[in-house]
Length: 480
Image (cartoon, rainbow, N blue to C red):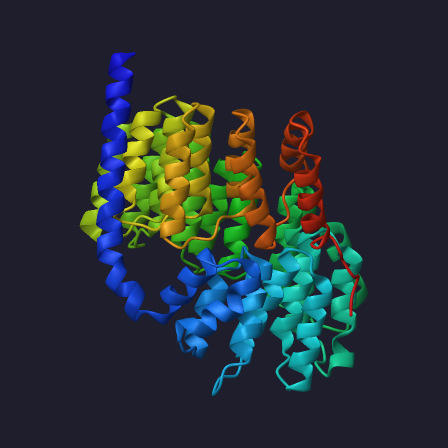
């Protein structure tokens, strides 16, 4: 017990040093960088005072600054919308098409469809609408499983003076296929393929959709149809076919497709090799994974971070973490920077084996070479919560906020669930309110846990307050 406490004290002291190093190096940058100044205000300011606080900061906005802020706050839709509204009123500034698109995505993500269509109408009045605007809307509706609304967005384009073309048609099919509605996509394709002549991208979209189903016979049928209408497969099509075969457990058949590519003069890309390496890793065929990686290098294809991540994943699967270190060293030698995915693969492997101390060491080490994403923070917070160490979970949360990283729905939920497990009701309520204030709708399970605690403690007034806040996010108009 004494040894455990000693180790924990060491971890905490190292964390404090890390936080101090971060704060001292970043303070000056925050003062100079307008994006960071705005983010700092948005992270700390109460909802009703945001416009006033931004006015008082004296910061000036530009197209690049607004686009970057909206990107950083894409998970906090209503907060981003307040900033968007404020920025639109500043002198010598006009929102760009990209800023409108960022805002449309953020609103659709939290199902504020009325605001989304209001933005579309403003863009129409300014002559700023384009094909991509409607592709974003179709994609977001489809992701929310609002298939009829996605089709409506396509059909209404003419009314907004943006005639649909092949790119829009492909956008609709892609939105449906990626949301696992490939049967609807196929139906639309069959009805409209005479109106929009399909290209290799169209067939690739359907091919990938049937692969996600998964329906290998139908995928083969699409591939054959593509060849029959003399639409030559490109590198993307081949990559999708290799991926489908690998996911169907037919890695050897996928190799034959790669050989056909070589015969057709279409060289395999690093993506295709990453798919093969990843598949061999899942199947515990570590020697084949390594051989494929070496073959790629012999063929003159430069390894990128995706291939290295696949190789790291393969070594993690068979618990060869010394080989993982060798791969990381090779990446450093060859100038390939690890990304958050690299970190997440290693962390999930270590945590799955119960090596939580080692996982925390890796997390601290990776902070120096790559930016964590929402999954990274979530997995670390979950690790500490499940280990009963709320103090360290909250320190990860605090560090994340210092980095001005806006938590995702999953990150919020993970910490709120951890607090509920320890009956830390007040802290859980603060986080729940912050989550809702940022326009992020909590999962029913998470809200239900907090609800039970509040009822148990006789705090129905707090529950009513949170319900009222939540109800503001629930309104979902169908369309414009």
